[in-house]
Image (cartoon, rainbow, N blue to C red):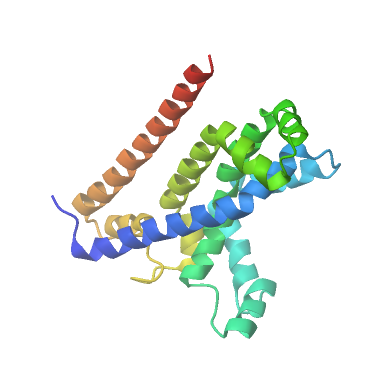
Length: 227
């Protein structure tokens, strides 16, 4: 059994969406996780709760509010359309924004845990050697928290690959534009094309298993290396 040519478009779009979203989440999530790990601000628990909301919210609920916010009459969508002239919903850019919000806890929480476990000793030692904040981050923090980054990248990418509700709400089902692999599976099931649905679902199943296997193997490797 081979993938039909009509399913190659959703497959490629899914990989592109997951890659762009993961890069965006690393750019946004790293400083946010660092701040959460280091701050004693009294609003920290509020920010942590907001970041974790996608973990428990039904995707359709989150997708509905994103549809309102990113729509042409919403605050973000109206601003975007006035500046760029194109609507944000039912576009690839809208999908990236929605996916980034939906997958945010899967990147921020592993990074926050890694930064939490770092402690202050190594940073104070680096500072005593006159290493600046950026130098300390790249020469001390990044090597010591590498497992956290690997976990964040793999979980953020994998979670974006498998999302359905948020994508359907703000992206619809437009071939070669917003139709990702999870929606292609839904279409095949609706059309009672079970062999094609089995093939795509099996790809996602194997992919998810390999990702989790890699995360556990990498974490085990670093735990053994530290002992």
